Image 1: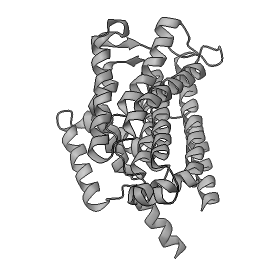
Image 2: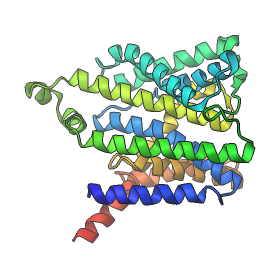
Image 3: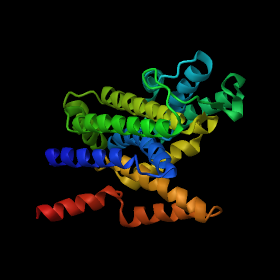
Image 4: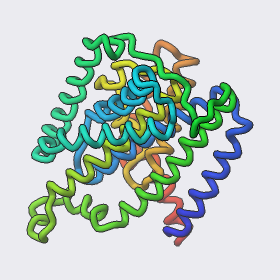
Length: 313
């Protein structure tokens, strides 16, 4: 199964990379943003596997985005790889402090406390004129190893960078899920006391998952800010974190590719729903969520799992 998953991932990656040269501009942008946000959802899925739901991933998503904006607008650093690395470091460093408190809580308390921290950042960004207040700040086009590209080449290059990062992250996530720490997530969800009796530290495991989720959210915010070219405090607002939870439920937690697939489906669905029904597109998404919960409680990924089991039989 692992070998087959690797082959499928490789084929899909090559297909997406080649298709980028022929995709229309709107589709290229949509895929770049969707895959970028999918990384934040993947981090959230790691927490959900352990029975934890965070409504505050917008905290690290915005931290990564504003790190890129600060480097671009204030420091003058435009290299994409430096910006993404800095965004990940800032997000993980922030999570290292916040996580010391978060690991002590579970269930609704974990969700609400994570939301509170995210809204604190939102309030600070709104009131801080140095970061553009409610208007936000613009992000200059990134450079690639010192090379500055024109608009068409820039979009394709950024798209390829996002795909490359997604491939690396998916591979690492796959290895992580199959590791003892990854398997420990199910045990923590079923019963923390039993895990402690086995000699494993639940707090350390949750803390590690929290740091990984924050790092992925920081990279996600960096990629989306570079693609959009603008950041604002709404990236830390509760609706952004709620969107990540929506996509995680839509895709399910059955596979590491599920968040990326669900993110693409969500962004495409929202784009077309807002275009053809601009005043009721939220209603459309609500109906989709209701149908998924009723008929696909394990998310869209369960459809692929059922098909795979049917082939084995």
